[in-house]
Image (cartoon, rainbow, N blue to C red; front, side, top):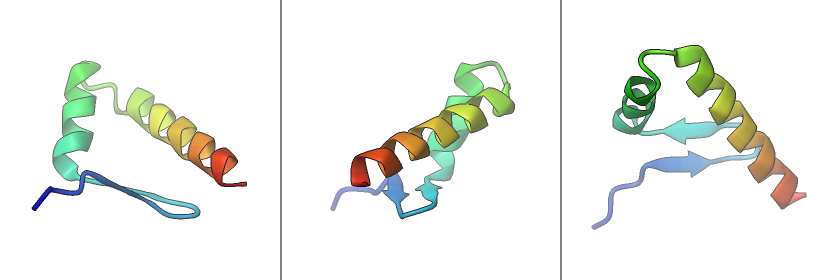
Length: 50
């Protein structure tokens, strides 16, 4: 069975902790950058659903 990495709801991204921490490590601990990217991703998904 495949592991779910991300679930998108109308107003939330539910993200696997491993995926989140790997993203933070990739930008050398800049969690604010990752937060901004995740918010942009959610906005893009919301726009597609409208």
